[in-house]
Length: 357
Image (tube, rainbow, N blue to C red; front, side, top):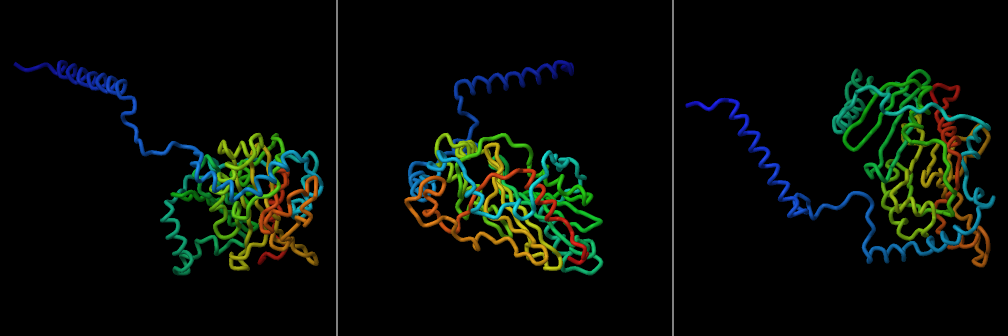
């Protein structure tokens, strides 16, 4: 006697239902089943007591000063402590609007696995002339690098790199595993920078933080490598009720660096750079803006050139109180208009009359 196929289907359904029921009973009896007890929860976790004590000792001077500055309104002297974007590139015009925002969704679907991209880059640099000609190094005269680290993202710096000249622009968006590549118009570069950095109108309350440790936002070939760790360390000692401190503890910050280099200097010499911390609804400039000088004007100094704006009077009161205890290498922090940041990027990528520059 053969069993009808319909009965086979019924048996299979009953077996599946029995398995689901048994699993449900097991989960009710053992609610921790299926979880990995050694897995760390997502998000920023507070350090243990021993590490907290070490952090408080390491950042005690900055934490104490931060508490005082939180209660002290900012004055004109704050801006005198660093070269601002407006000092170098000028400020936005009143009523000036933000440029259009372009994001990775506007790019084509050309995505390379990161190892493949690096191997192609090596071939283009050192391979036969016909292969090397496909590299942007063969036609671009300038390059803009925008590094970003976000506490809710990969927690590792990400890079948007744009190769460009007057006629062409090639954008690369680098993640840990892949690189998305596409051609864009030179006129769209600032729009892609805005989309990548998420810069836009800000409505937060300006915080009392005036300085950050130098290792919070280093510049160089791979900037921001220590930023996530340093800023989360600072969240432990930042004053309760401080907008920046509360945002750091909540894991809501966005650190950015902008730098522009040129083919004529071998791509290694940076001729303009800028650091920005976007946190608690306010955009802050961190450290000096470095810009290309016009003919006959000195270049904006780097942070090392203005080693100490702190003063030496430890009894000073008001906004200058406590600055004498800040390390000379530390980075001054001032609020900045996000439109001024985007305007600075537009000025960074302006090509001079000499097409070889």
